Amino acid sequence: MFFITTAIDYPNGKPHIGHAYEKILADVLTRYRRLKGEEAYFLTGVDQHGQKMVKTAEAEGVNVATLTKRNTKVFLKLWEKLDVSYDGWAETTDARHQACVQAILTELEEKGSLYKKSYAGYYSVRQEQYLTDRDRNEDGEFGPEWGEVEEREEENWYFKLSAHATWLKSTIESDALKIIPEFRKTEVLNAIERASETDLCISRPKERMSWGIPLPFDPEFVTYVWFDALINYISFAGYRKSDGSDFPEFDTLWPADLQIIGKDILVPAHAIYWPCMLHAMGFEADEMPTLLVHGFWNVRGDKMSKSLGNIIDPAELADKFGVDTLRYYLCRDIHSGKDSDFDPERLVMLFNTELANDLGNLLNRSINMTKGFCNSTISSTDTDNEEDRALRESLAQSTEAYIKAMNHCEVSVALQAINDHVTHCNGYLERHKPWEMKKDETQLPRVGEILSHTAESCAHLALLLSPILPAAAEKIFSQLKKEKLNKMTLNELQWGLLEAGHQTGKPKPVFPRIQIEKKESD
Ligand code: MSP
Image (cartoon, rainbow, N blue to C red; front, side, top):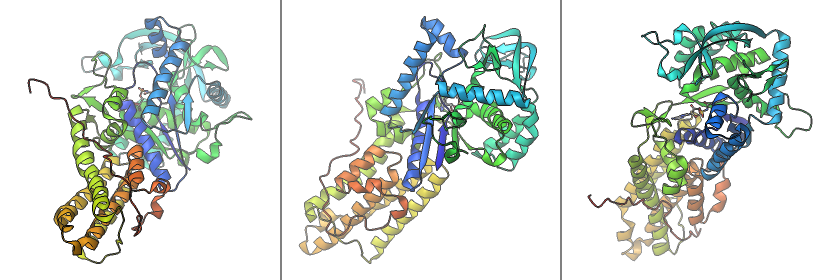
């Protein structure tokens, strides 16, 4: 079973296109696995504890539990709107997750992996962590990225992170814990030594912060939010589940094949804390999930933030331009692991050119002309001439390139492969001009063959596109009167999906052009 997890979100504030991208990417890769005929399980959710939640609740004058519920609903509604279809939903205030975290803490404490000590130092309220001199900038100050920094002295519980540093280094060096893309691996290796110099503080005194999971062996403390949240990846997969729980069977899921995270939470949380935590629990190097690290969506070069007021709301975009438009843009315009700049004009331009003009037109012309010139009837595509062979070869190459790219989680490269064949097909139609040829009745059989080649191509392209644009793929299959192709897997894919004599349906634009209202001054 292919198991994908994503970094769960803080349910404080509004979700933005960065969050939406991550879940859409995971959804696309899950759907792709199913398209390959594999079983797949996608777990995501919300990280509900921590000081940020408490502070937001205080600022809004609401109870933190009420705020948590309210904000969680926003995420749930968004994923539904964006066709993000997950199998497991993790909420860290869930009692079953709490029981799992406590069971793990008890085991680690019994094993001697945890200890209590007093510590005095500088504390970043925003990042919810103690800082060291290494976190100071060149001027010797703690930079604005740390937010408010205060001096604190308190007793806390620590996890012996440093005991796992040597193991972690060799596990990453040997790729037993694989990090994609490759350049992120170097970043992690450089960070290991530094991050494991100090152990990880895993508690917060209850008197200061009570919105968390109580330590089972010292109830005056709650669990540090990262320690709690990271465990969602196994608790909701059935780790240490209680009898009668409806969680999955852990052995069927773990190790997860992919953990999808953004670059900001690679170091130290996912590449250092998490593997060391797993190792301390008894998981071995070959049980570490691969980390797929994506880049950031920025806005005119700036990070999206409430303070800059540049948060781009995915729900608004989906309402305005359609879910498929947004899914297409987010998958198409970011390249593996790199950052990208959100540009609404590019979103419209890419949709209008690549979907409305190129693919949409190819489909529309194929079905429309098949209806007008061939009584909606597909002809045999078992032909033997150079142009037809080249088209079939182009499709085979695009399909191969698509599979290779999707296997490497490079969705934008896969879309390029699809678009290459669309371009080939449109060129083929332009060269043959079936709309001219049909004027000579003796040419009608050839017209049928030509249109059937492009209609057949559309069926293939819809199947390849289905993980990315599930709704559009369904519409294409429906116009081709081949609804059952929606259930087809990649290994069943072969030339001849539309058999000779098959009747296609009515053409209707699947990607109607987005008209941008012109300002009067334009
Ligand atoms: N709650 C933690 C994750 C805990 S996982 C055990 C968290 N939440 S978050 O809401 O800040 O981020 C959720 C995910 O969205 C992270 O993977 C993060 O990298 C990603 N993104 C946040 N901003 C982003 C962009 N601007 N662009 C793309 N992804 C971004 O971290």
